[in-house]
Length: 285
Ligand code: ATP
Ligand code: MG
Image 1 (cartoon, rainbow, N blue to C red):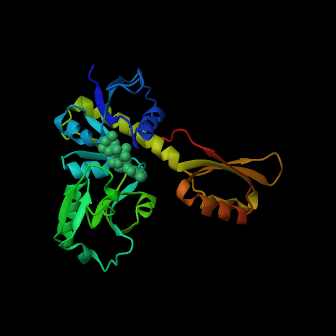
Image 2 (cartoon, rainbow, N blue to C red):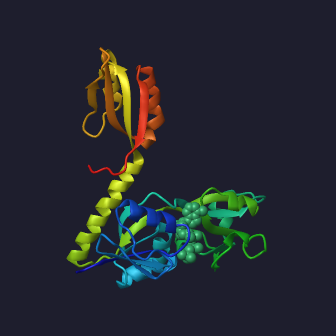
Image 3 (cartoon, helix red, strand yellow):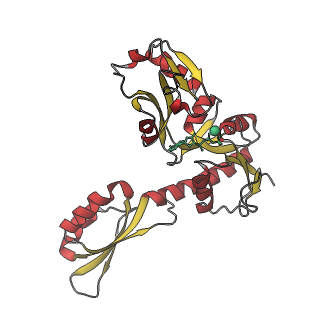
C-alpha cells in the first residue's frame, strides 16, 4: 500500500513539537527517533529525520512527500513547494541587527556596509527591496558574534526574544521576515498521496484548534442567561442545563484562548459563578 513520507528535523528546535503534533494526531512511531527513518504504527506514513536545511530539497526532489520545517528555511532555499499549513510553533523573525552604540537613521545605514548572515538569499532580497547596496557575507553559524570580532557591520539573523542580540552588544533595527514552523509538500503528489496528506492535515488542524480552544462550564442565575450566551456563543450555541437549585442553570461552551481573559471578566460581571475551564483534546468542526 502507498505510504506518505514526511520529513522532520532530526534534532533541534523543531524536533519536540513536530513529534508532539504527530503524536497528538494519533500517529505513533514504531522505532523512535535517532534513526534516519521511522514507521508510523497506525497511519500509512514513514518519517524521515533530516537536518532542517535539507528538508526543502528532499521534498522538491520527491524523496519526501512533505515536511515540517521553518518558513525561514523554505524561503531561503527557494524551492517551489506547496505551503499547506502554518503550525504555530518555532515562531521567530529574521532581523537586521547592528552594534547597540551605532545610531540607526534608517535602512540607508546599511549602504556600503558588510552584513553577515546564514540567510544570503533572504538578505539579498531584503536589500533589493529597500534599494540598498551592501556586501553580503555568508557564514554558517554564530552570526551574532560577527560585528564584535570585526567581521561585519551588521547581521541578519534569527531573533525570538532578542536576548542573544543583547548579550552580544547588538540591537534589532528592522525585521526582514516573520517565520514559524510550516507543513510544506511537493507540488506534484500523486492522487493517493494527496488524499493521505489531506487526512493528516485534517488531524493537524483538529489538534491545533483544540489547543487554541477551551471548554468552559459555569453556573448562572437564569435571568442573566441571555447576556451570558451572547458572550460565549460556542461552536453552534451553548448548552444550558437546569441546576437542582431553582432559578439557576449550568452553561457549557467553547472559548478561544485569545479572548479568554476578556470573556472571563465579562462573565464574572454578568454574575457567572463556579467557572471551570477544561482543555479540549480534539476538535472536529
Ligand atoms: P539543524 O541541525 O537541523 O540544521 P539548526 O541548528 O539549523 O538545525 P535550529 O536551531 O534547531 O536549527 O532551528 C530550527 C528552526 O527553528 C529555525 O530554522 C527557525 O525556524 C526556528 N528557530 C530558530 N531559532 C529560534 C528561536 N530562538 N526561537 C524560535 N524559533 C527558532
Ligand atoms: Mg540547519
